Image (cartoon, rainbow, N blue to C red):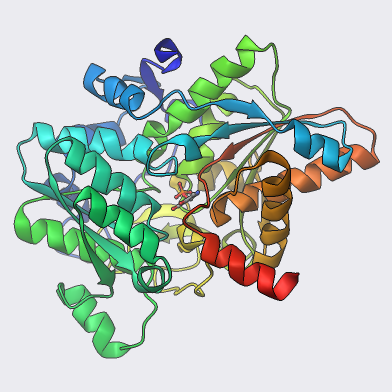
Length: 419
Ligand SMILES: Cc1ncc(COP(=O)(O)O)c(C=O)c1O
């Protein structure tokens, strides 16, 4: 089993159809925000962020940690769902919910915590939306003997107490963002004391916190390096599909900052396996339908370098939908480029639509998906339905990025209004 865990991460950058627009310092500013990355990111992570190599070797210690926490994750076929729908589509899914923190996020937290610990720092900080990334950082940092502070978007901090408790069980300090622990948070609270918070704002707080303490800041999504660390998902899935003699026609994943979709799909895109790649987000956020492809800051505070990406604007405050992991204004630069070039297509669905899909999936496959992942399932259901109407045989593969066992309050609420 362990040898299914890849020996190298896959970096899509050399395989993009055109050069990736580089990160940029904001015009007219004296201090370099690209230079700031040197202070807050572990050195190896920063090197990986700017590498143009297609393959980057995974250190043995990180491969062992992946195995320790349950990689390779299973690739399963959703036969009961296919039967219930009466479709001729074959539906395969990679199950990242099998990891102990409940989602794919651990794949990127482990290497970053490992590289931070190797530098001898005492702790790390980060932001979290739904709490999935925060839980992954809490566990990974503890695994390598580091302290951690997690700034959790206030709406999630209040809604998702179980995930907060999970982070605290692993030993993290969890603060609601905006918080009064940073100057960015204090000024956000001064301008709106009832702010729900946003992922971009929590990012700014985590960066400030790391800078003050000489800690390292761990990045949960968006940056190329995070997408590369997540490629273990797709590389394993490729090998697992090859083992059973199958290839996907359609590859699907949900999108917050883009690391889940990219981690699963880029190895397929790089190997030209599949003919359709669909990134799925929320129609309450409208990143794809309303976003612009332009240089913008990944964090609301404007600390980090500007990236060319599909964005709703760094000051966009998303509505407090339950899928906290999708409440982000931007989209990873490589994925933005692929969407802009129409190599990757997109879909958006609302909470009612994803709830129906989640209920169908849970009642057939027995897995309650995270609401974020239910966006991907909703797209799968649509494609499987189309295959049924057209009497087409099509292989659909999607990443079930996380389980929803800590999201049952969302499902409880949705069942109450939609029964
Ligand atoms: C279960 C789950 N799926 C998907 C996502 C979206 O993440 P990404 O930023 O990797 O696109 C998240 C984000 O927190 C998540 O928790």
